[in-house]
Image (cartoon, rainbow, N blue to C red; front, side, top):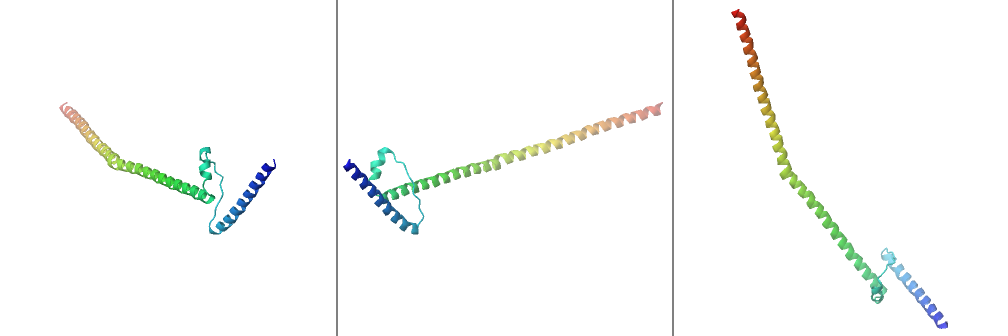
Length: 146
């Protein structure tokens, strides 16, 4: 039991020493840059490997992984934006080369059909007018004949 108590005291002193060392080191770094502490969870099969690094190496390792992840995230964002740009570009190209000519073709056909309808209406009107005028002439001839 006494041995166990000594181990706890030693661990407590080591942790206090580590805290003091960390705080001193952090106070020096605080003048240079801003920082935050985070608690991370490591899988049980990686704990021994992670503990083999010194605290500085751990920090460098985590920051390196975070930097790589940030680069990957930016790359994915750029790929996503490029994909969206290509989709919009293809829509514009399709609109210009397919939809606009079809639209102009339809408008042209509608105008031609409208003109043809007007011509047909004019021809029908002329026929009707001529027929009515002939009837009037015939009626006038009949009056004179009587």
